[in-house]
Length: 163
Image 1 (cartoon, rainbow, N blue to C red):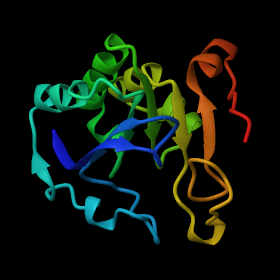
Image 2 (cartoon, helix red, strand yellow):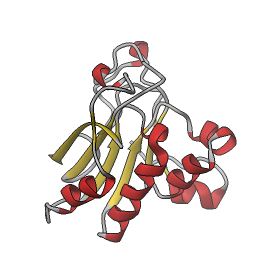
Image 3 (spheres, one colour):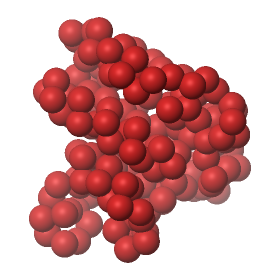
């Protein structure tokens, strides 16, 4: 998989100590993105998914996996393997995507929907510079939602986490 960067012990990409996997490549190219160097799909470095999993498992204090980018849904098959390994290790999985939940459910590929079903919390929607905020937890702009994916799938409607 193409990786922009890996961060152990992140405290800004979801609750607790997180292993953050920033994938390389993003079609959204949001103005004001905090990782603009992750946009080019040929940038970053190639890593074997198993190597990323071993790195994630190397820290016994890790509470969860965060998939970010770039755009994780563009590498859904590889990110699904990471999410499954995280769940197998008792970790929760968060994912940041520029796509909306509704778009993924209606127009996403089978791989993207399989990844979605393996995510605990989805932070969805593009970063919008005009909606930028520092006041909401775990989001960069007001349009983005914290979606409880298992509850949303069960209800057949978007269920968000409280602020």
